Length: 322
Image (cartoon, one colour):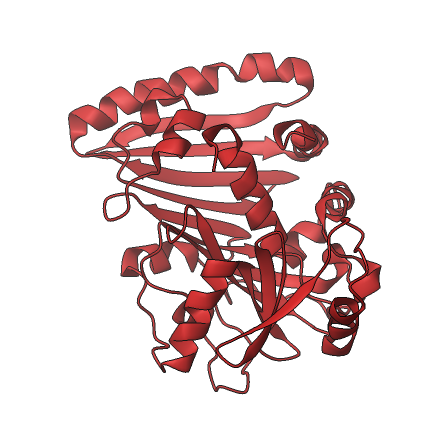
């Protein structure tokens, strides 16, 4: 994969992961439910037990909280629907049909993603679309194949397989296959690093992400695509986002080899946040930003108001090269 397209491809893959539920959802779960998912035919009810343990990063997104936002939910829905490869031909509308996405990022064949998507699914409509070989709204063709005894539907190396009418495994082909192999071999258990699980299961979080770059170094393509000094020597990252005061508050930390590296990185982070005055010219304003060093960690808290979030969403097509 060409490095010039690495980030946009990863973003599109993660976006596509959240797009496969196919009938109306009946509201979101309670705050803090995190990785819990409905029981399926295999008896599993834990999304993180389904995901392989050698993750570069893991995360969870409360889709209902984002799409249900009274301030920017409608704008987010428009953006997501624009990039969905499938739509009403499969009985699908992302902003209506996705409840929660729990995902992991891996390095099997380049950058791979595996995710557990909670919603409701109409298998008959999906099979009909695949059997017809007709172009979907994205212009591609949904292809059905078999792996580990299950039907897998793919389009341009991204796809999904239905575990039940309430849960699907989605992501890149390699990511989906690794999950199905765990199920087939009866290896379903929590293998993800405990501190990563603790981060992404933060009660009340609308979005949470944890990355381990000690075991799995940040891909060189990613480092080149993010030309910021604080990315160098980064060992781990934790980020939690929640809705507060008509906006989103992000709290996170970045871990470095030692205190000296953390102090140097903190200066770089402060410089980047200092550029926010230029973003204000585009209508993107930070309500607050705080950076401090705690031993080998750089801790960051940022608050973004709802109007700025709408502006960010409006600019997203430019970042994705559309």
